[in-house]
Amino acid sequence: MKSEKYIIVGLLALLLYSCGGVAPQRPSQRKGQTPEADSTQLAIMEMNLQLAKAADRAVLEAAQAQEESYALYEGSAWMHIYSKGDETQRLAHKGTVCTLYMRIYTLDGRQLEDSEGTYTIGKYELPTCIEQNIRELRPGAHVRLFAPFYTAFGAQGTAHIPPYENVMIDLEWK
Image: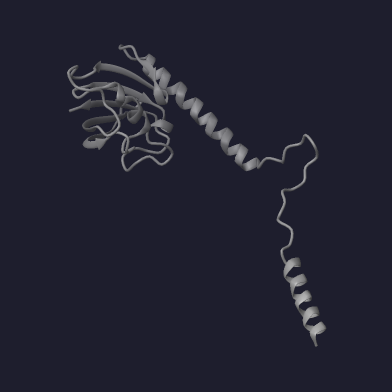
């Protein structure tokens, strides 16, 4: 009877131990070879790269066609500063609340939006091209930006701005 208990306990222990199994392993590869890339993912990446390059060219050409001189700022945006704003005020920084008046146009000059709103810098309520470059400005500033779609309103666009639209933004900080 005692030996039967030991046998049963031994079998249970062996059963529990053997159920652990082997952890899943990565597919084996020959030395020096990388796994095959997903061709769909590579095609999408290549298409996005081509769209971004074309957008950069279009924005550069639009900025160069202007009478004013433009400089390339963060986020691939070309900016002309008409006024940096009130020199007695601090530069914009994370947490600064500002009221901005924006007029947004296509690169060929068709107006898409005319709006005024209050935004907090650092909360990404604004397109990347504005969010990154407003830190160069103070209240009272007036600038014009030429921005590619990927730093402006992206592949989704907005209610008034179509997807993949490169834009010109007249921005005034009230």
